[in-house]
Image (cartoon, rainbow, N blue to C red; front, side, top):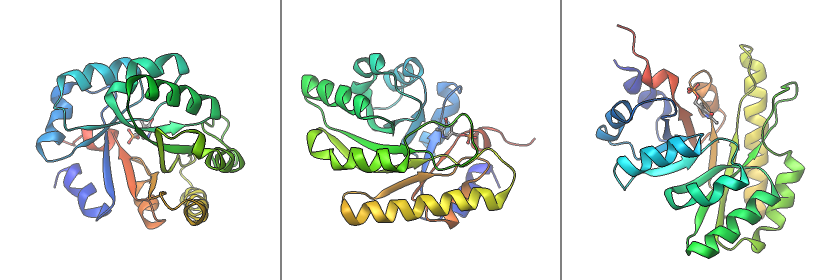
Amino acid sequence: MTHYEIVKQNIGNTELCIVSKHRTIDQAMVFYDLGERIFAENRASELIEKALQMPADIRWQYIGHLQRNKVRAVLPYISCVQSLDSLQLAETIERECVRIGKTVDALLEVHLALQDTNKTGMTAEEAYELLRNAERFPHIQMKGLMVMGPHTDDEDAVRAVFLKANELFKDMQKQYPPFQTLSMGMSSDYKIAVECGSTMVRIGTYLFTEEE
Ligand SMILES: *Cc1c(COP(=O)(O)O)cnc(C)c1O
Protein backbone atom coordinates (compact mmCIF):
# COMPACT_ATOMS: atom_id res chain seq x y z
CA MET A 1 0.00 0.00 0.00
CA THR A 2 1.11 3.58 -0.58
CA HIS A 3 1.42 5.94 2.36
CA TYR A 4 -1.61 7.75 0.99
CA GLU A 5 -3.69 4.56 1.11
CA ILE A 6 -2.47 3.85 4.64
CA VAL A 7 -3.42 7.34 5.80
CA LYS A 8 -6.86 7.16 4.19
CA GLN A 9 -7.48 3.83 5.87
CA ASN A 10 -6.31 5.10 9.26
CA ILE A 11 -8.28 8.34 9.29
CA GLY A 12 -11.69 7.06 8.19
CA ASN A 13 -14.04 10.03 7.87
CA THR A 14 -11.56 12.56 9.20
CA GLU A 15 -10.72 15.17 6.56
CA LEU A 16 -7.28 15.12 5.01
CA CYS A 17 -5.40 18.35 4.42
CA ILE A 18 -2.41 17.82 2.11
CA VAL A 19 0.52 19.93 3.33
CA SER A 20 2.28 20.69 0.06
CA LYS A 21 4.89 23.12 1.44
CA HIS A 22 8.35 22.61 -0.07
CA ARG A 23 6.91 20.26 -2.71
CA THR A 24 6.65 20.88 -6.42
CA ILE A 25 3.37 21.39 -8.23
CA ASP A 26 3.82 18.04 -9.98
CA GLN A 27 4.22 16.32 -6.61
CA ALA A 28 1.16 18.05 -5.20
CA MET A 29 -0.93 17.28 -8.29
CA VAL A 30 -0.59 13.54 -7.60
CA PHE A 31 -2.94 14.04 -4.64
CA TYR A 32 -5.25 16.32 -6.58
CA ASP A 33 -5.60 13.58 -9.18
CA LEU A 34 -6.46 11.14 -6.37
CA GLY A 35 -9.38 13.41 -5.50
CA GLU A 36 -7.95 15.61 -2.74
CA ARG A 37 -9.06 19.25 -2.70
CA ILE A 38 -7.76 20.63 0.61
CA PHE A 39 -4.14 21.78 0.41
CA ALA A 40 -2.04 23.83 2.83
CA GLU A 41 1.00 26.07 2.68
CA ASN A 42 2.84 28.02 5.35
CA ARG A 43 4.42 30.72 3.19
CA ALA A 44 2.59 33.39 1.24
CA SER A 45 4.79 33.30 -1.86
CA GLU A 46 4.65 29.52 -2.20
CA LEU A 47 0.90 29.46 -1.68
CA ILE A 48 0.29 32.12 -4.32
CA GLU A 49 2.56 30.40 -6.83
CA LYS A 50 0.79 27.06 -6.42
CA ALA A 51 -2.70 28.56 -6.27
CA LEU A 52 -2.12 30.33 -9.59
CA GLN A 53 -0.99 27.17 -11.35
CA MET A 54 -3.10 24.45 -9.75
CA PRO A 55 -6.84 23.90 -10.36
CA ALA A 56 -9.25 26.52 -9.03
CA ASP A 57 -11.39 24.11 -7.00
CA ILE A 58 -8.64 23.59 -4.41
CA ARG A 59 -9.52 24.96 -0.97
CA TRP A 60 -6.22 26.49 0.12
CA GLN A 61 -5.44 26.62 3.83
CA TYR A 62 -2.89 28.96 5.36
CA ILE A 63 -1.09 27.16 8.19
CA GLY A 64 1.96 29.30 8.97
CA HIS A 65 2.22 32.36 11.13
CA LEU A 66 0.51 34.97 8.94
CA GLN A 67 2.19 38.34 9.06
CA ARG A 68 -0.25 41.18 8.78
CA ASN A 69 1.66 42.69 5.86
CA LYS A 70 1.09 39.46 3.87
CA VAL A 71 -2.68 39.39 4.34
CA ARG A 72 -3.43 41.49 1.26
CA ALA A 73 -1.33 39.29 -1.01
CA VAL A 74 -2.65 35.87 0.09
CA LEU A 75 -6.26 36.55 0.99
CA PRO A 76 -7.62 36.31 -2.56
CA TYR A 77 -6.33 32.74 -2.82
CA ILE A 78 -7.22 31.16 0.50
CA SER A 79 -10.42 29.63 1.78
CA CYS A 80 -9.24 29.23 5.38
CA VAL A 81 -6.64 30.78 7.67
CA GLN A 82 -5.94 27.92 10.10
CA SER A 83 -3.43 30.01 11.99
CA LEU A 84 -5.53 32.90 13.27
CA ASP A 85 -3.50 33.79 16.35
CA SER A 86 -4.39 37.31 17.45
CA LEU A 87 -7.12 39.92 17.58
CA GLN A 88 -4.90 42.25 15.55
CA LEU A 89 -4.56 39.69 12.76
CA ALA A 90 -8.35 39.25 12.75
CA GLU A 91 -8.73 43.03 12.43
CA THR A 92 -6.39 43.12 9.45
CA ILE A 93 -8.12 40.18 7.74
CA GLU A 94 -11.57 41.69 8.34
CA ARG A 95 -10.52 45.04 6.87
CA GLU A 96 -9.04 43.37 3.80
CA CYS A 97 -12.10 41.11 3.34
CA VAL A 98 -14.31 44.19 3.33
CA ARG A 99 -12.04 45.85 0.76
CA ILE A 100 -12.14 42.93 -1.69
CA GLY A 101 -15.66 41.71 -0.84
CA LYS A 102 -14.72 38.26 0.44
CA THR A 103 -15.61 36.07 3.38
CA VAL A 104 -12.95 33.70 4.67
CA ASP A 105 -12.98 30.78 7.10
CA ALA A 106 -10.61 30.75 10.04
CA LEU A 107 -9.48 28.38 12.75
CA LEU A 108 -8.16 29.72 16.02
CA GLU A 109 -4.64 28.44 16.59
CA VAL A 110 -4.14 27.56 20.23
CA HIS A 111 -1.08 26.19 21.96
CA LEU A 112 -1.74 23.70 24.71
CA ALA A 113 1.62 21.93 24.93
CA LEU A 114 2.99 22.73 28.37
CA GLN A 115 6.73 22.48 27.90
CA ASP A 116 7.17 23.55 24.28
CA THR A 117 9.40 26.56 24.00
CA ASN A 118 8.72 27.52 20.39
CA LYS A 119 4.99 27.60 20.70
CA THR A 120 2.85 29.40 18.18
CA GLY A 121 -0.76 30.37 18.63
CA MET A 122 -2.90 31.75 21.44
CA THR A 123 -3.62 30.58 24.92
CA ALA A 124 -7.10 29.15 25.52
CA GLU A 125 -8.04 32.40 27.30
CA GLU A 126 -6.99 34.49 24.30
CA ALA A 127 -8.99 32.22 22.01
CA TYR A 128 -12.13 32.66 24.16
CA GLU A 129 -11.55 36.41 24.06
CA LEU A 130 -11.38 36.33 20.26
CA LEU A 131 -14.59 34.27 20.10
CA ARG A 132 -16.35 36.74 22.37
CA ASN A 133 -15.41 39.39 19.80
CA ALA A 134 -16.50 37.31 16.80
CA GLU A 135 -19.31 39.70 15.87
CA ARG A 136 -16.72 42.39 15.16
CA PHE A 137 -15.49 40.22 12.28
CA PRO A 138 -18.51 39.48 10.08
CA HIS A 139 -16.31 38.49 7.13
CA ILE A 140 -14.39 35.89 9.12
CA GLN A 141 -16.20 32.64 9.79
CA MET A 142 -14.61 31.14 12.84
CA LYS A 143 -14.98 27.43 12.22
CA GLY A 144 -12.88 25.78 14.90
CA LEU A 145 -9.42 25.20 16.31
CA MET A 146 -5.99 24.34 14.99
CA VAL A 147 -3.61 22.66 17.40
CA MET A 148 -0.07 21.33 17.13
CA GLY A 149 1.05 18.37 19.21
CA PRO A 150 4.17 18.73 21.34
CA HIS A 151 7.51 17.84 19.74
CA THR A 152 8.16 14.62 21.60
CA ASP A 153 8.20 10.85 21.07
CA ASP A 154 6.22 10.44 24.29
CA GLU A 155 2.83 9.31 22.99
CA ASP A 156 1.12 9.88 26.33
CA ALA A 157 2.26 13.52 26.34
CA VAL A 158 0.94 13.95 22.79
CA ARG A 159 -2.35 12.30 23.72
CA ALA A 160 -2.73 14.53 26.78
CA VAL A 161 -2.45 17.66 24.62
CA PHE A 162 -4.88 16.36 21.99
CA LEU A 163 -7.44 15.35 24.62
CA LYS A 164 -7.18 18.80 26.15
CA ALA A 165 -7.70 20.29 22.70
CA ASN A 166 -10.82 18.19 22.18
CA GLU A 167 -12.24 19.31 25.52
CA LEU A 168 -11.61 22.95 24.67
CA PHE A 169 -13.14 22.45 21.22
CA LYS A 170 -16.31 20.92 22.68
CA ASP A 171 -16.64 23.66 25.26
CA MET A 172 -16.25 26.39 22.65
CA GLN A 173 -18.74 24.61 20.40
CA LYS A 174 -21.38 24.92 23.15
CA GLN A 175 -20.95 28.67 23.18
CA TYR A 176 -20.35 29.04 19.47
CA PRO A 177 -22.25 26.45 17.37
CA PRO A 178 -20.51 27.22 14.03
CA PHE A 179 -17.45 25.50 15.48
CA GLN A 180 -17.09 22.24 13.55
CA THR A 181 -13.41 21.74 12.72
CA LEU A 182 -10.71 20.48 15.04
CA SER A 183 -7.53 20.50 12.94
CA MET A 184 -4.86 18.42 14.63
CA GLY A 185 -2.45 15.66 13.71
CA MET A 186 0.58 15.65 11.40
CA SER A 187 2.78 12.87 9.94
CA SER A 188 4.17 11.81 13.30
CA ASP A 189 1.03 11.99 15.43
CA TYR A 190 -2.06 11.86 13.22
CA LYS A 191 -3.22 8.47 14.48
CA ILE A 192 -3.30 9.71 18.07
CA ALA A 193 -5.05 12.89 16.92
CA VAL A 194 -7.80 10.91 15.22
CA GLU A 195 -8.30 8.81 18.35
CA CYS A 196 -8.67 12.08 20.27
CA GLY A 197 -11.42 13.50 18.04
CA SER A 198 -9.56 15.36 15.29
CA THR A 199 -11.84 16.25 12.37
CA MET A 200 -8.96 17.23 10.06
CA VAL A 201 -5.38 16.00 9.90
CA ARG A 202 -2.65 18.03 8.15
CA ILE A 203 -0.09 15.72 6.60
CA GLY A 204 2.96 16.46 4.45
CA THR A 205 6.16 14.47 4.95
CA TYR A 206 4.64 11.01 5.26
CA LEU A 207 2.52 11.37 2.13
CA PHE A 208 5.31 12.73 -0.01
CA THR A 209 7.89 10.10 0.92
CA GLU A 210 7.42 6.51 -0.22
CA GLU A 211 9.91 3.78 0.59
CA GLU A 212 11.36 2.21 -2.55
C1 LIG B 1 4.48 21.34 8.09
C2 LIG B 1 3.21 21.37 8.84
C3 LIG B 1 2.38 20.23 8.90
C4 LIG B 1 2.74 18.92 8.25
O1 LIG B 1 3.81 18.32 8.91
P1 LIG B 1 4.41 16.92 8.40
O2 LIG B 1 5.25 16.48 9.54
O3 LIG B 1 5.20 17.22 7.18
O4 LIG B 1 3.26 16.01 8.14
C5 LIG B 1 1.19 20.35 9.59
N1 LIG B 1 0.83 21.50 10.21
C6 LIG B 1 1.60 22.60 10.18
C7 LIG B 1 1.13 23.82 10.88
C8 LIG B 1 2.82 22.57 9.51
O5 LIG B 1 3.59 23.67 9.50
